[in-house]
Image (cartoon, rainbow, N blue to C red; front, side, top):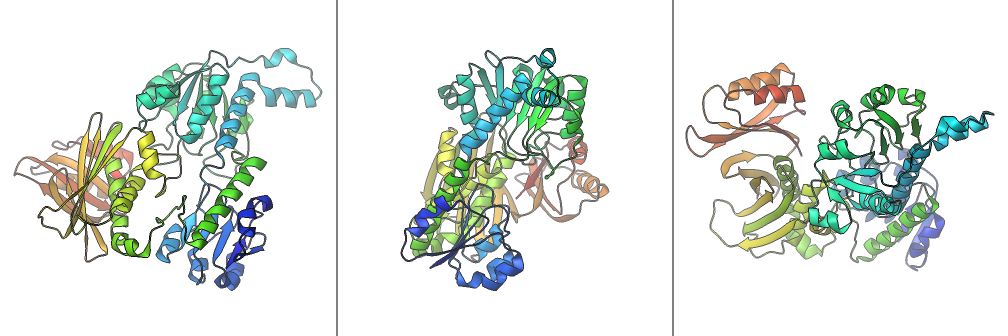
Length: 526
């Protein structure tokens, strides 16, 4: 078997491949799409970093390809959908950069506290201006950690060594779990009001975009300092600029920007701003770790062994895979759908399988549902192996049931999610082996295709609801492609699902919420 290794992956990390007598390695630099298309048909596996793009066209010509490995966490340069469609495993190295990012976060925090970059620049310019760069100590300061996942927890642990007091916001982790780490969970607004330093460790989603914006800065203590080594776009950079100019924010350190590369941000004009060019994972140790991890995963995939860090599909026997494969996309979409409907910290997810699924191996389907549920809300890369562990670590009890009850569907997946202040149930099925549908929400019968953008509108079943909602959406140039309404009794509560060609703007959602009889409105992206 032949494995193509590109993008200057650490040679020392490839020993797992070199030890295999049946595997031949071909190491090259970055390749263009055309160059790859010419040769990719000869390879059984490939490993890339971020430079080479593994496109649908490349995969189309990769007739022998079994696995694509990404020596790192992000897989934006790999067409996951195309790989999945061709049965190609995509694996990554999700844990290799944890320490590197955590240490950079601490370095940024210390640099902010002691004005290290500014003092260095001044000294190099020939000035000995000791009084101009008086800093503050980290000891006894309150550190607010936004996102207490793998990296956020590592930062909290290191900050405790600096004798800082740690508070955190993470709606998907229990208070007991946080307390075990010596961290006090608070509502997001309280973290903003309490913290002297704030560090962000969230993925960029529609919920987290501009989470730190003008309203957030207005809530913060005067003199707060901000660090972001996670994802650009979580902080509104224009609002940050204004908060720093006004003096509300005493300093900020960013390793990531909303648009990269970025060398001309207005933030660079401010003396209390420091930045690095996305160096989070750029350590020798991290690069070696991810190379070792991904090489081992590629070996396992080529040998047919268990693969831990699959990004797209689980590693299953062909017999089991043939049965469960049609239900994996449905389950993952149901998870995403449910996660965006429910409010509050989820503590229980119960999945019931009935009909044809009552006596099948359904664990992979449960895992797919958990993957979809957790994928949009966690900074960690969620896959079919770590999804149950991530759910367990966040105090979510997962219950799986199989019931041979009679029903209207040949197969049915029912999921009930319970939070500290909400309870959502969603049911789905697959028609003709390939057509996933959501058929019930909280007991209201619907027939919705779970894809794209969906507007969810619970309301009172009465006239002058559907028309005004449609008019408002149309007035903002958003096209409606399909509509479903479910009700139990005439004049009671009902739900409306509108499939739309793009997200409905926030201002439109606010107007819809004011319509008499509308009980709520949510954008859902699947």
